[in-house]
Image (cartoon, rainbow, N blue to C red; front, side):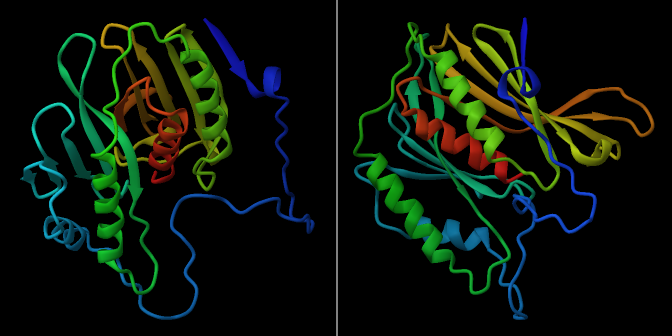
Length: 269
């Protein structure tokens, strides 16, 4: 087991401001967006987006099936498409495609994240819906990604992904610590919360946020998930919490597509 930290390998320097007028290097990222003007905020209505998508033209020859209010599928065989709306708090729509893994079973792989950023004036749900529908129509015309049991690019892809999430992360509440290499097929990217932890939904204290990236050689697929590690108030119990996201990817996907999806999922924290 080896630990890649900023101090040892990345020459990372953290600068502190003590209130003496130093120029701010950059604004915190993530969290609630600042609003310009004084008009009422027109929030995003996800139900309108779903309704607009359901009323859109067919996608190829795929049969549309609304499984649940927040889950739509087109087709049922390998190559089928799926949209899922995630709950408030990590507000986004996830586009997935069904493929066969190396064991012969089917898996939904993540193709794209559509963050639903609230807080803008004059939100137009039909614009979101049109963008998503156009993407799915284009995706349906592309080759289906494949599982691979001989993938040798995990370490290189992991380093690229780590570089992306340490440059773009919810800096309003956390900061990167480093990368932990548990084994050749399993890496962790570790973040800690500012101020010794923040209040968590568990009524405890969120101390750490981890992103796990794993190469499942049996399935021939990649898996990525991110989650809080919480402690009870006034003690350190380090309890792993349910994942904010948990997605599969195929090694034949472009690295940029995988990295972009993970970064966007992370930034909805």
